[in-house]
Image (cartoon, rainbow over all chains, first blue to last red; front, side, top):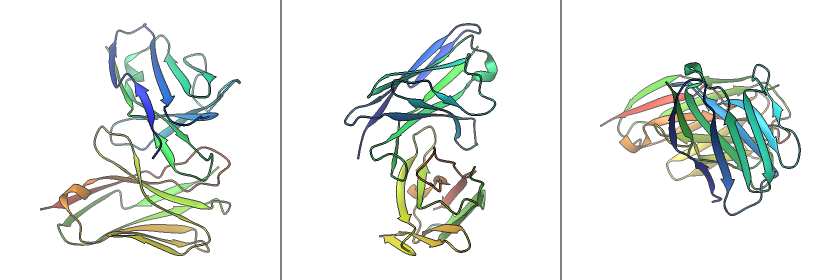
Length: 116
Length: 111
């Protein structure tokens, strides 16, 4: 199957600092990527849809100024958590599909963010 | 948007028994029905999927059945093994937007 690589796999940061997470499609081009957040023992909740060359679409309740998304190329989307707080600690995971909607989604390894 | 309900939330079976997880969805436009398996701390991975023109699909010990009229589809695992222990998510897909995941089912297979 296709490969989506996410980096870093884990990060610990201090409150008030920013953290950047990268999501790369290694063997296919992804005009659209998705960012999810998963709290312990919960499901994946969509945060935003990242579109190459245009602004991301954020889900209701997700602060676009806090979670900055950039999708500057067909193989790379980045999520920056700005001014992180302990409540932002979570498992962040990206996904993309080769064939777009209605096809298998491939996920990055996920990034466990801990804000202290 | 899509409302997705998944049951049960936890399921414990003895090794060798069968497990069934059900997913109910609301959007009649859904036409792709995947099941994902997520082990602790890992990424979700597709284990089986079905399209709306098919009622059942089987891959060795895993099967998925679809009832489009009733808007539900189910994951069936036979002859369960300890390595089947994980969280399973359904994610009915219309093809027009991001996936909406079910709440997940934590399957525990007791040796």
